[in-house]
Image 1 (cartoon, each protein chain N blue to C red):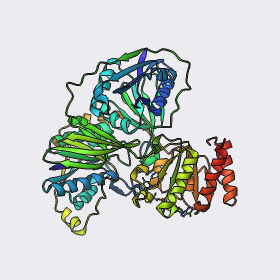
Image 2 (cartoon, chains in turn green, cyan):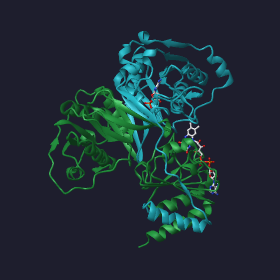
Image 3 (tube, protein in one colour):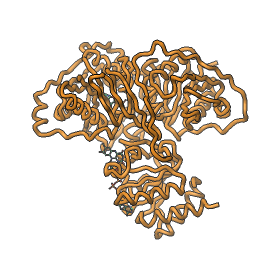
Image 4 (spheres, rainbow over the protein chains, first blue to last red):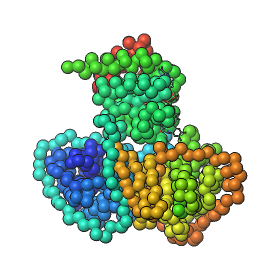
Length: 330
Length: 267
Ligand SMILES: Cc1cc2nc3c(=O)[nH]c(=O)nc-3n(C[C@H](O)[C@H](O)[C@H](O)COP(=O)(O)OP(=O)(O)OC[C@H]3O[C@@H](n4cnc5c(N)ncnc54)[C@H](O)[C@@H]3O)c2cc1C
Ligand SMILES: Nc1ncnc2c1ncn2[C@@H]1O[C@H](COP(=O)(O)O)[C@@H](O)[C@H]1O
């Protein structure tokens, strides 16, 4: 059989990240001609039983690296594990999510393996020899580059979350599960995670959210941000902000969307009181549906918007929140 | 403390970009170029570390990515901010590389210098790779911490503790020196070059190194050493034409909810 595709599936606290299943789905779509095995690898201190879920979403084999030393993410240890596996199974490609972890791990692994690295990919095609044609945004999403690796082996790709779809769950089946023996004797001086400080509350993560509501300077004062939060709560959405709002200190940087903030691809993005500067667009222009609410009909955000409302956000947002609540009410 | 900052010169973020006729690259003529915004955080952080520790020097290192660019100007800006010395890797052999071949040349140059900490930006705003810094660290065999928005340097104990942004929280990471960090917004507020700073910068050393001085084989650097080749550059797919929803606020909201529910089927 042709060289397999290896998918690194990130887990935290025994739960898989959705983008890992998206990557398995894409690996399956790439593995049709010629047929390739799709091998999922999960790394952690207590990985639990994820085989069923991975099998249901298309993986044909699973590898587990489990060790107390892997409680926290470590670029060095993860790279050591994946390098061993890659040399043994010689995958055509190694896919993972373009998450904080994936974007940290992939460059290191690529340098270790002297492989091609394709970061934050939004479309993929595999030629019969295994070489990938990948599309990725450049210049803050103003353009896209289609690129090809010079060697059809061990091409390392991070996939932008929410862009590729997972396979529909398939009927249960058993797949081979192999536990890797991990040994970390020869590793070099390393960076160690001491602790993870969780963000207070149960703030929904922007890069994974299906719906995002963002507020900008049009909200005038920080107290008004609660309008955004109420609408988001009604929609079950994550909350984001423009840089103007972050620089003014209304919200921490983890809320910022754009060139110097997060890049998001939700199904629905609702921008309230945001002008839509190019640097803001850099973070959100790949959202599926964009709604803009702004009192200036010439605001650049309307050029991107799927649906635009020219109006006073102080009037529009509360009405919208009520309407959503009514729609959602049982 | 010996601090080295890798900076890239990039088109200003508000630039209007056009694709060249061959469809493989942007047209650089008439663009204005700046220090990559994330690299400004790296320069600022290096200057602050030097100020806090009370001794040391800050070297800025840049590789000319394309013959039409003049990274000398970006390096002078960093010297005007307060960096002590600049090195430009400039050779046709280095140009138009990918993250790997660029990192290879930068790492080779770094091996010829002594350093305690290397600082990079989180990502460039042209290639959007977020890779070169991490790859430099790997090639040098030193630890890295990427996407850092808070940094403590313990010069005595020779280690750093860095905060790095992850989904839903902060990873607190400790690493021994020498190490490499990549800088995220929030780490600091970069200073503007002062007028005396700009005057002084003109006297500061700016060395130009070619491939022989860096010590990399030309066929491993730049376009020749790249693991990726560009097939084409294209505009993003056009968004379907948007629709302005007319009417007063109440009518518009009603119609919006209907569209989101029935047409876009997302709520
Ligand atoms: C290097 C660089 C990086 C940058 N990175 C980012 C980034 O990552 N993210 C980012 O967002 N920006 C970024 N920016 C900043 C960007 O250029 C804009 O300045 C910023 O996005 C503006 O934020 P805003 O839309 O909230 O504010 P404004 O541009 O002030 O827009 C406010 C909007 O609210 C509307 N408004 C006012 N009152 C009302 C009302 N009552 N009802 C409805 N609408 C109303 C106004 O019409 C206006 O369009 C960056 C800039 C640079 C130079
Ligand atoms: N040509 C270059 N010269 C110097 N440093 C660079 C160059 N390219 C990238 N870097 C550094 O690597 C970081 C990440 O780059 P990238 O992988 O292109 O996003 C940048 O923020 C710089 O610090």
